[in-house]
Length: 186
Length: 115
Image 1 (tube, rainbow over the protein chains, first blue to last red):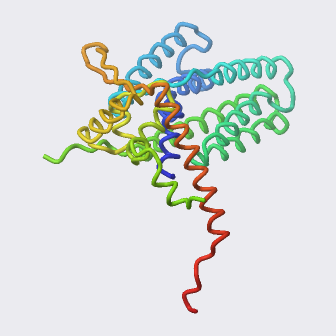
Image 2: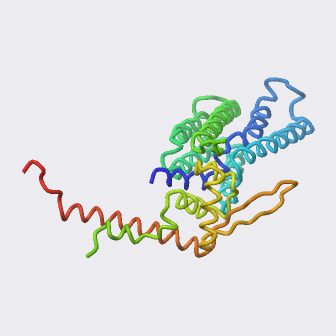
Image 3: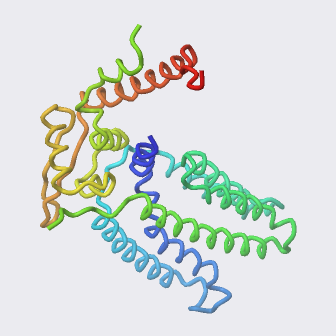
């Protein structure tokens, strides 16, 4: 029964467990958040961001090939949850920037995202519960850090770093749940 | 009334074999999966997995599609409609058996060995 639970979980969540695939995009988000403070390049220059995105895309392609060659491929059922998540995150950013509210909607949406996927994981992704709690707590940063823009900076930093941690843990979970292929004894 | 053990003997052996049940359960959770994924998932050797897939294909529970992607031959496995019905029905029967077994234990407690 436990094995069949694992089979169903890995098959259903095969792509989201490939955590390394999302790391290049998250690193771009981290660099864009830090660009003003680190002076890596003239801040706000779109061509640098475009170049970063191009590099992230190339890295994601390489990582995708690694996953396909190592673990195989699954064609999943069509899901709308990714689109809904993206729209909710975009709406939350717009709301946070325009309202400058003491509680960040973006942090709450991210917390809801981790919480929802923790509930769906049948106990396999217990670390998502911790990510949900951290994200929910960061939503209240604008209450303790002023000005609000500074609070938003730290909120983004915490969310990106914790997400990176979650993605690495997802990858490790996939490696643990999918035993290496057995070869016939020669 | 049949005991849970008698009902167990009546299960479809093509589906009930552990490796095949794992394959069918995985395929029921997606549109299709390739050979490498199923091999990693079940931990079977290539030969063993091929044998199980052939049995399932002969039983018309799955369809094996071979296609060329780039320069590589990829084997994709798809659950057929009868296959989906068979695994769903099998899970339902297992659940019924579980319920039946729990009830059966409650009705007939094991004899006291110390007596």
